[in-house]
Length: 260
Ligand code: NAD
Image (cartoon, rainbow, N blue to C red; front, side, top):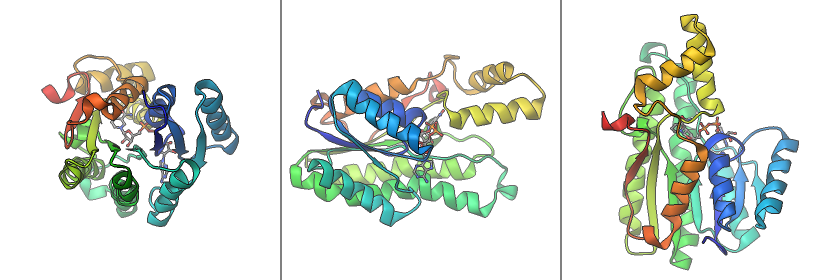
């Protein structure tokens, strides 16, 4: 279904990004993978994507807080494969604290990695997409792009920003064969959430299992985690011809979180 298309998935060495990369590869897209981690583990992932799915994969070590490195990552996709057809802006970090105690450096880092990186990668990718008359930009937002939670000022601000940025890009590209949308996941059991579960278990002196249940039940009516594979499948749908007229939307995949 995505044979011959070339995709960048930022933050794809872990969690949701890795899940999205695997689904796009399974559908036939070549990949630029990106993110931090152990060099041997990343090379194993890259080689595994090629051998498991018969596609080509290259790795970019670009730091998503650095605009020049983001531009180099987009160039790597174009120089390796000849085009940039799909851009999934997924890299993200979290920090929780009340506003009064929120460290300035965490605010700047979250805004840079969770929001500004999407702006700079879209800016670099759009000329390639316009040249081909096809492009799919998928920003991984969050339920926190639509509603708020206490102690997540930077994250909620960044994710609401991503939803707004996606709408602007959708308007500027409407009718050109390019779409831009935000996927808004609820809780997904990844390292980013595991840290929050462990912090809750510590703070409240409860087991990790009890903290996991508590975290889920507080927000997600289904009481079940969303999976990276489900998010990957939704991203693949947004890349398909059936989704050509879906643009500028913020699509929750959240077990009912934002229905409340
Ligand atoms: P994760 O911690 O498992 O993965 C984050 C990825 O981003 C990793 O590959 C990491 O190396 C990469 N990354 C972090 N900083 C980077 C930087 N400066 N440059 C390049 N790569 C960087 O987290 P996850 O839960 O898979 O989150 C992925 C995205 O999904 C984030 O944008 C997050 O906000 C969003 N999200 C997660 C959940 C959830 O419940 N897990 C819910 C909604 C949205």
